[in-house]
Image 1 (cartoon, one colour):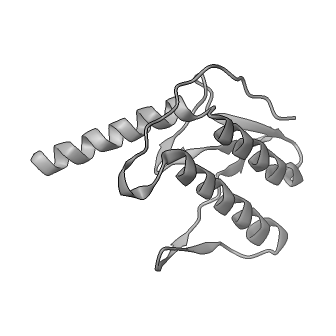
Image 2 (cartoon, one colour):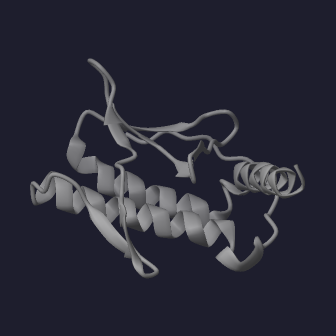
Image 3 (cartoon, helix red, strand yellow):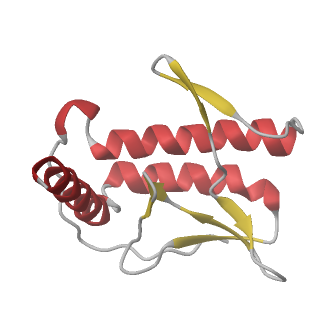
Length: 135
C-alpha cells in the first residue's frame, strides 16, 4: 500500500545548465529502479552507473523501518524532498513492491507533485553557491 497526499503546487523554473530539476529527479528515480534490480534481484553488492563521463555509485533510497514497513525517501542532491511535509513513501511489508512505488513516484514527479519542494531546494542551493562565490 502506497499512501501519499496530493495538493496544488507551483511549477518550478528551469535551473541553469544542469537541466530542469524535475528531469534530474526523474533520472535519479530511474537510477533507483536500476539499482534495485542490480542489488535486490541480481544480488550485486552495490550499483554504479555512468553519469556523463564518470561512474557514480547509487545509494539506495529504499529502507526497512525496524519492525515496520519498507519505505522510500526521495532526495535531490543530498536534500530530502517532501510533499506537504511528508518525506517518505510507505511501500509496505513486501520488498518486491519497491519498483512499483518508484513507478508511482515517477508519475508524481511528472504530475508536478514535488515541484514546490524542488523549487525550495534549488533556491537554497543557488543561494549557497552565490554566497560561496562572493564570500
